[in-house]
Length: 135
Ligand code: HEC
Image: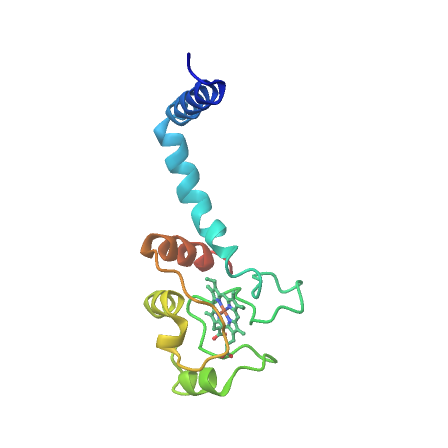
């Protein structure tokens, strides 16, 4: 006779398999594309907002960040490193944002953003696409 815990964990495994198979593939794919960027932003939200009404964030407001000049938000006290990086007037293109989000300290050494980076290129792409809509 099987121990009870074995029988019940087998039943649980069967149940979760049935659930996973129960979702139509298109539905979960759609949910992934529309929500992935916003979901990835949760990693930034501890320090950044996209809503000017939300004050007191440690990092600069990211509304309109795609295409914005580096270190250009009036009233924000950027680090010397970030100011120097933006001194030639460069903007946050999608490519530059992608590289920065992947590895902030490699792209702007000694900048003040203590964030490890997002390694997953697909997650970065979804995040940047979502940020581009926050205007
Ligand atoms: C632990 C806090 C923290 C987290 C988490 C964080 N940031 Fe930052 N971020 C900062 C700070 C602080 C700065 C200002 C850096 C400086 O002045 O050197 C900054 C600066 C930036 C800038 C430059 C803005 C400008 O006006 O030039 C971008 C772009 C940015 N962050 C994007 C992100 C994104 C996207 C995420 C999430 C994937 C993220 N950050 C996560 C704190 C954070």
